[in-house]
Structures are given as structure tokens and as C-alpha cells.
Length: 223
Image (cartoon, rainbow, N blue to C red; front, side, top):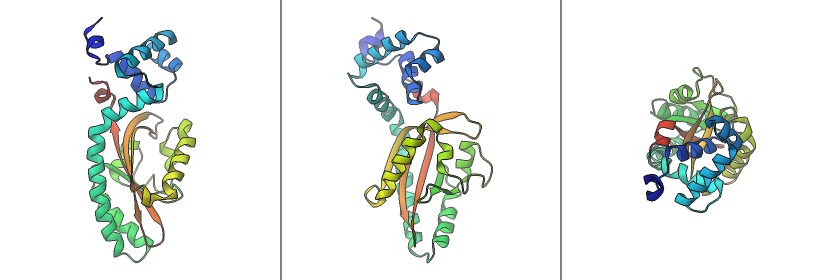
């Protein structure tokens, strides 16, 4: 038995399997990606359960991503809360939805994190410069697009259900946190993200602010 097995620390290969699973790969896809057999992938899942608990595959991935994303999520949540409070105060003095949106854009334009404003129909009303850079789009290219454009097609159904559930009563879901969510760039490449959502009431509707930060594979694979 090696040292990682004795200590319960996940090996690099085990972390690789969890990251690939978080990206939506099946065991067959993981096996192909790593150049190993499906049976070997199954063996690794057994080892992961031996170290992390006898959970389902989904739970193992969720627990791993929660642990890895916790620091980024805490930072993003604090920044979201701070900006949401500022936005809510500014929204109170705006007499039209357009005036509110203009105020929101000015506040968010220079923010260091990727931020988007999404309307109740799931349309991107505004994406700041960092969001455009993160997803590989040009200036104003995301405005007016469905937010589903930034989600891999295989997750569209789940995305629509999650968005509908959030928008059904955003006042009871003031902050929504998501870790290990897959995003897709304009060039088709995918990456894992940590995101937080919060709702801002305007004069006539609700705007959702979405804060996004990429999770790079290097940090996910660190022990």
C-alpha cells in the first residue's frame, strides 16, 4: 500500500478521474482520455470511495469540486454580496428599467471578475469585459444572446430547469452558488467554473447578476 492510500489522500490519477467526471465524461470517455481500460477506471472509483466514503459517483464528484472550489466560491460570494448591495441601492433611485440597467453596467464594467446581467427570459443584457474575455467573445458580442450559448449542449436541459427554479422565486434564493459548472467558449473549448447568482429588482422586472470564475485544471489536480 502506498503512502497516499495509507493517508487517504487522493492520488493524481484519482483527481484526474474526478475532474474529468466533473466535465461530464462517462467512464468510457475517461478511459479513452487517459488511455486506460473502463475496468481500470472502475478500480479507481473503488479506491476513491475507500478514501472519500461510500458515496455515489455524483456525490463523490460534487464533494471533490466543493472542496476545491470553496476558496474561490467564498471570494466570489463576498464580492457578489458587496456589489449586489450597491446595485440594489442604485436601483432604488432609477425610475425606469433602462435607467437601472445603465447604472448596473457602469458599476460592473470595471469589476475584476466575469459578470453578466441576465433577464427573466435567460437573455444576456450585459457582459462585462472580463466575461467577454473568459468566453472568447468580442466587445458587445454576447449582448442579446441566450445564456445557454455559454453552456455545453448536453447540459441545456439541466440549465433550463435550474434557471426556471431560480427565477420562480428569486427572493427566496437571494444567492445561488454553483461549483464545477461547465462553460463553453466561442471556440467550443470547455472549462469548469464556479459561479454565484443573485437577483436585483428593477422598476418592472428582475435582473440576475451572474459572477463567474474559471477553475483551472492545475489547481484542481493539486493535492
